[in-house]
Length: 83
Image (tube, rainbow, N blue to C red; front, side, top):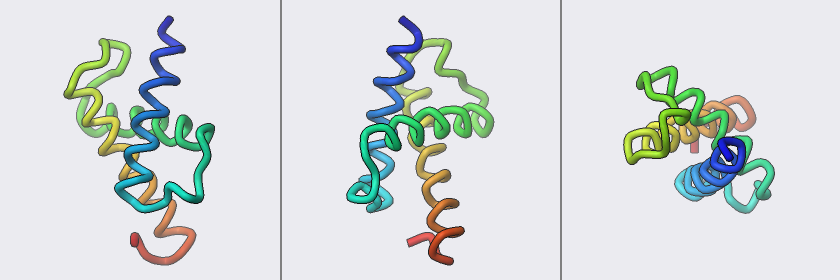
């Protein structure tokens, strides 16, 4: 059950982050899920939260911030600017 929660929350977080960073047209559902999961990891490192503790507003927002940071870094490397 935990894996399904990671995939669903990761997909939603990745999609929202791609909407904020305006990269949604370049990404598919699989990349949204990957960005969301890696963003949750980054957010957990930065803010000390864990999605394994359950999906709360705090873990959701920290995952979203982590995903936005990940997309900003990717945009910076690919294009030379954050966007």
